[in-house]
Length: 191
Length: 191
DNA sequence: CTGACACTAGACAGATCTGTCTGTTAGCGT
DNA sequence: ACGCTAACAGACAGATCTGTCTAGTGTCAG
Image 1: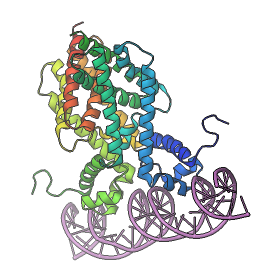
Image 2 (image 1 turned 180 degrees about the vertical axis):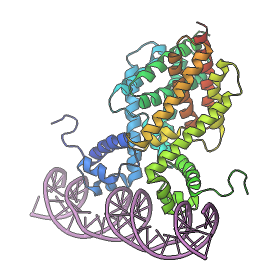
Image 3 (image 1 turned 45 degrees about the horizontal axis):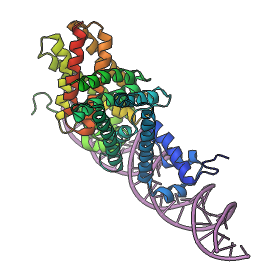
Image 4 (image 1 turned 120 degrees about the vertical axis):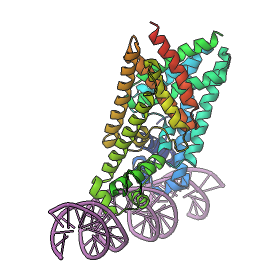
């Protein structure tokens, strides 16, 4: 009855199930059988749609990247001021970290349990590079003297906020990181 | 022939092998057989010394905690000034991050691939609490107006430096985090 | 109606993993 | 010399995991 999907394909159902299970319990911990059981789908559908488990993991991470991109960019549309847009990245993180199922960065988590080469590494560094690019662009728009240097500072804070929000629970670290980021941004603009 | 250990016990050999493999490849990825093979030890010795794999994981994390504690405290003995001792925590991290095999925080990594309850959670939060306590004590000695508040800021930077050093390779993030920490500490002392 | 296609259900092979058990060997204190 | 303990080698059971394969079902275009 839904407008977008009156009947979801097996691929969509698999991706949704994989997203929940992989993020909540880990890529390596969750087996194929758990995924197809939650998706209500036959095992052959998984291998026909994604080739193998690595393909499913890649699709899971790509989906996470796209979702994150849309979430952040959608959030930044609220603001006009470039400085506020730059700092808004931390608001988006705080919002995510406040939700119950928050478990930190899906890319880092997947990398912690897989071999350093391969699929996870690729998707992870793509996601990380996108974040840096976004920050650098916004820093430049805001008029920072050295956008790249400011970005490196903000990345440290963003990573720390992500880890802290996961380990300690709740958005406190993200809000604290935004406060520090505010002083750094203002210092970089007041040159 | 070595002065310290003419013949290492099976327990020591197992712990050393587990430390290398678990940290490099992940707690869940590395199987029992890999550990005993690297240790050059019989499987029964593992189960006699640690009970089960969880026991080995716990011992691995406890060893990591103790090693980290000694490394940091040893480093801090170089300094007399409490302010420098507080900031020296970041120097210790930078030193670790510069070494080739650095893979970030063993506790976070182990938590990313195991179920949130159980052994990993316990050891991880113990290690995290110790770090907070150390920072708070040093901040108080240094004369910070609000040691707890400063600690929360430094934890964010420390976490971010750890993640960044792992993901990007090398101690750059740790050094960058120390620079930010320096301004925060000085601001907290100049009240 | 018919054939192509996507999907389902589930058996199966082969690998791997944890944990147990048997039997043997070597050192060490008494 | 004797017995205790630690350790060895490795087979084994039982579970689980990935990936393949067979056979059947429903849907839709032409």
